[in-house]
Image (cartoon, rainbow, N blue to C red; front, top):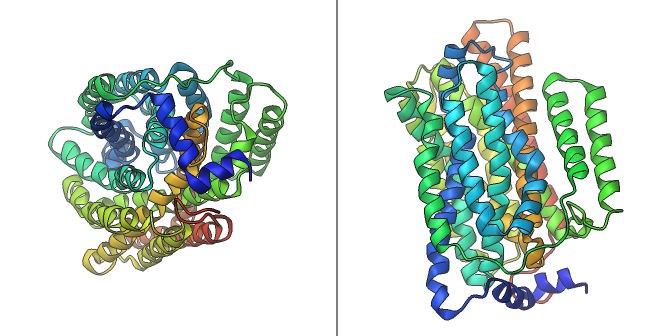
Amino acid sequence: MNSEGAGRASGSGSARSAATALEITPRQDSRRWVALAFIAVAQLMIALDATIVSIALPSAQRALGASDADRQWVVTAYTLAFGGLLLLGGRVADLLGRKRAFVVGLGGFALASIAGGSAPTFAVLVASRAVQGAFAALLAPTALSLLAVTFTEPKERATAFAVYGSIAGSGAAIGMLLGGVLTQYFSWRWCLYVNLPIALAAGVGGWLYVPGSTARARGSLDLPGAALAGAGLVAIVYASSSQLALLFAVGVALLGLFALRESRIAAPLLPLRIVADRVRTGAYLSVGLALAGMFGAYLFLTYYLQVVLHYTPLQAGVAFLPITVASQFGSWLIARRLMPRVPPRALMVPGALVAAAGLALLTQLHVDGGYLTVVLPAELLLGAGLSTLMVPAFSTATRGVEPRQAGVASAVVNATQQLGASLGTAVLNSIAVAATAAFAGPRPVAIVHGFAQATAVGAGIMVLAALVAGLLINAPRPGQPG
C-alpha cells in the first residue's frame, strides 16, 4: 500500500502530520472550532455568490440590455474563472501559507464585488464576475484545505465537513432568498455589494483565529501549466455553449498538453499522483457531474418562477428555501451521523439518485403553476440528495493527502465542482434555448418546454454521478483498514 492509500485507510498518519504541521495544542483546540466558523462564513460567501446574482439576473438583464443567449455568462464567467484558476490558487495557498491566502482571497473578492455592483454595462458586469471567480479560486481551496488538515479524527471530521457540505448544499438557495430581498427592496446591484461586509467579517476573524501553517510547499509557480489548464477549460465551456466542435477539441488538446507538462516538470502545479488515486478521482468526478446537473436547475427555476409564474424576486427567493431546509437535513441528520460508520459510496450513490429524482420531477413543470405539486417536492429531493452526496465527497477527495499538498488537492475538487457548474449551465441553457425556439406554441409554454427538455438531461447527468461513485469509490468506512 502506498503512503496515500495508507493515510486514507487509517487516517492516523495524516492526523499526526497535520497536527504537527499546524502545531495544534490543547489550548488551541477550541480556537479550531472558532476558526471553523469564520472559514464557514467565507465558504458561505462563495456559495452565495454562485446564485445570488441569478435571482437578480432578470432585472440586471433588462437594465443592461443583455440577450437570453448571453445571460448565462453572468453565471458562467464566475464559475469558469473559478474553475480555471483553482489549481493555481491551490498552489499559491500551499506556497504563501493558508492564512495569508485566506485573507488575500477575501480582500480581492470584496473589491471585485464592488466593481460588479457599479458596472455600467453588461460586459463590465461579466468581467467583474470573472475577477470574483479568480479570487474565489484562491479562497476556496484555502478554506477546504484548512478543514482537511485541521480536522482528522473521524467524528470531528464528519462534523467539520457537515458544516462545509451544508453550506455547499444550502448556500445556493440562501443566495436566492437574499438576492430576492436585495433585488426587490434595493437593487440588483446590492447582490454584489453585500459581499463587502461578509468578507470583512470573515477576514478579521480569520486573521485572529485561523491557525498558521509551518508546512508550506517549496518550489515555484507553474504559470505555463496554469495557462494551459485555464485556456483548455475556457475553450471547452465556450464550445459547449456555442456548439463549436473544433474549439472543444482544442480545449481537450490543451488539457492533454497540461497533463503531459505536469508529468515532466519538477514542481508541477498538479502532482499527477493526486489524481491517480482511484477513490479520490471518483470523488472528483462525482462532484463535477452532480454540479453539472444541479446548476442548470437553479437557473431554470429562477426564470420559471419570475418569468412564467410572475413571482417577485422576493417571492422567488422564498420559494427556494425548502432546498436549504432539505440540505441541512441531508448534511446533519444523514451525512454527519453516518459518515464515521459507513463507506463513502453508501451515502454518495443514494444521494445522487435522490437528487436525480428531484430533477426528473422538474420535467413536469407547466405554465399554470405547480409550485406545491412539482417544485416543492423537487426542491426537497434536490437539497437532501445533493448534501448527502457532497459531504462525504469533499471528505474523501481530501483524505490521505500530505499537508503540504492539501491546497492542491482541495483545488482539484473545487475545480471539478466549478467546471461541472460551468459546463452544466452552458450546455443545459443551450438545450433549453434551442428547445424553446423550436417549439411551436405560446411563448410561456415554449419556455417551460425548453426547461423540461434541459432538466431531463440534467437528471441523466446526476444518475451518471451515482454510477461513477458506485464504481470508483471503493474506500472503506473511516478508520477501517482498506
